[in-house]
Amino acid sequence: MPQDNAARECFVRLLLVLGVTLGSLVDLSGVDTPERVFVLLVMLAGVAAAMPGGTPKVTGARAMALWLFVTLTAVSYVRFGLAPIAPFTSRSIYGLAAMLVLATGFAYCALLAPMSPALQRTRRRCALFGPVVFTEVNLLLYVGGFKLPTDATQGTTTANPAEILGWLGIHANRVSFPLSPGVNGAGVAAAVSLVICVLLTRGAQRSTCRWPLAGAVASLAVILLADSRGALVFAILAVVLSSIHVRRAAARVLPVTLVFAPAIILFVVGHLGSLTPTLSRTPGDFVTATGRETIWDNVVRFLSQAHVQDLFGYGAYGQTRTGIGWQDAYLFPGQQYPEFFSVHSLALQTILDSGWIGLGVLVWFLSVALSAALRADWERRTPESVALLGALMMLVLGGSDEALPGVAGFYLMISLVTLGTAAMCASMVNARLPEWRTAHVLPVVASSHVVPNARSVARSR
Image (cartoon, rainbow, N blue to C red):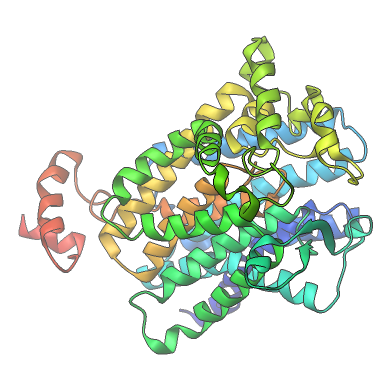
């Protein structure tokens, strides 16, 4: 790397690592306007620094899926900002929209237009460590007793016991972490981090396992303290699915399954009634998916009465605009603004925010990101490629019983866009060979124990 580009490259890598944390700061209501503007200016500088990397290596369909998804999400934020509902202000929600666009532009330039394969791998690894660093910083701030202004009414613990710690003989309440607006969001973010760290250690040398192992310990600690039972189960499932032979089918099915996840979850927990005393925080809540059955029923009842606006949604926090949030408010006693709590399903939340059109675009984007990650893993077979596939699977699975990634967990939205973009680099084979020759080349690559260089494959033909 030329000496005059060294500082710029360090800045790009640093933003890839800290981008998730910066997105969290923009999301927090305790951050004032000058601080929010400063973060946006840093991200804008990151876009400018990443642009000289070259021409993005991505197909038109993948680029369209990414930018259409980001555009619809940003538009939902702007629509809410045009007619805000207290306590959220227009400036805060506009900041989210700007951050999402800037973060996407930065990831697009930094991860799809690297100057060399080695640089591409290094940047992809930095992107993978983004959620890990966010989780570790969150844990360190909590241990150090740091508390942001937005948490003043929330405290550092909740009234609900930490059931997983209870199984281990440790009696404590669930923890609310400083960088996470909600307890569940911290758990899902830690689960993504856990999947990345576990998969990075597979096949890696002992000298390179130290940081992933430390990240895995920190991630597990956050999951236990947040008592994110579902996130822990999904993390284990994501590691398994990304490691076994059915991962191709899983990558194709998961985005569509997200739409039916509420029904699947209620069916499963309904048949685990005998475990209710062990798994419930309060009597009877486990078989209702901790109150989610009531929330999902209210959303389905609202959507069953067709409205024209259902096609394009009601803007961010659609549950509040439609009145559903007010119906569910009694489920969150002691909270200052319970009407803004999400509907705990990424698919249902997307319909309320961006409509049925938005749901279709979401499923398309997730399908494109997962298929691209699967292809990248098939070609490279590196710990980074496996971790990337597993992390994206975890983000999709996390949306099954949470409206995450989304406005309720904006840092997870940044993670999804960044990791999805990291997977979208055009196939090494398909990028250099005509489409009619791909069918002949791919079997040769698949049958080889070592993935050959695309150019040498083309010459051998």
